[in-house]
Image 1 (cartoon, one colour):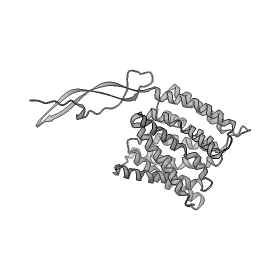
Image 2: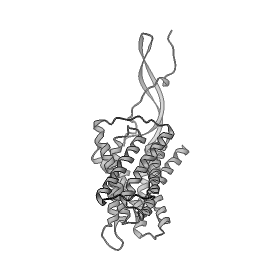
Image 3: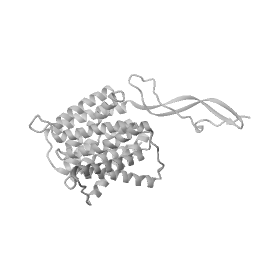
Image 4: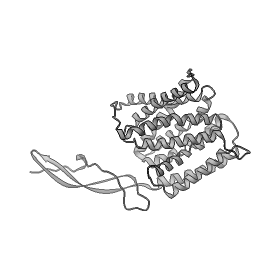
Length: 345
């Protein structure tokens, strides 16, 4: 369990460095090139990881109903980093790091409106606090007008929120293969958008650190996140990941040595409150206990086939539905190895 917690925190930290380091890279490259090589680096890096780890290279056929979600995932991963990078050109990286939490709001609201998923009371409170923090972070100092940079960062968060819901519909495919598709599809797409917008692609030796950042902050971070989920479960891993914006703020203040405005401190306080409700919402409802399942096992002895009613005792992490502490819903597969060996004379 401790190893899984380290993986979760490492995943959050690796993702957190992407915003302040991208802000530094913007002084050398345009947003189109950075966006493209962030994703190309993630895709290429995950191909190397798959080869080294001995992962399956078998192609998975995408079903017709899943194809729109796959296309939308790639398109949104072209738009989101471009919006973020153009926003970074117009705002402080510390603000952008905190505003990234708006992705949680976008993900939850889209899941509610489009896919009919439930939102708990604690999550509603967290959403309200994140919206208040986003407003505090988005106003220009000394005026009542919204910062253009903040609006672009919020638009990026909205794109990633929709992309999260699309990716969720593809979760039955290999996560490594999905990252590779994202990487090469979105990376090449960003290059084409840059070519159409500027008429050229500015490639220089600086794309190497960009690609490495993409591998570390997107590819490797996702790999560690998935590894942590195996022991912690999805909800607890997400709770650890909630520290990412705050790591990004600290890194931004250290790198740029710029005194933060008052809006940042207000936003920080509100985001801390939102994170508390997010953590208690996800971790508080997730737990495990032992329970039995009855199943009918059919097997054969030579030409004779017959069935047995068997009970299997096991436990796993799960979350009860709101207001239903006595039930949970999930599928179970009864394996031969789960059944105590027996014989017939």
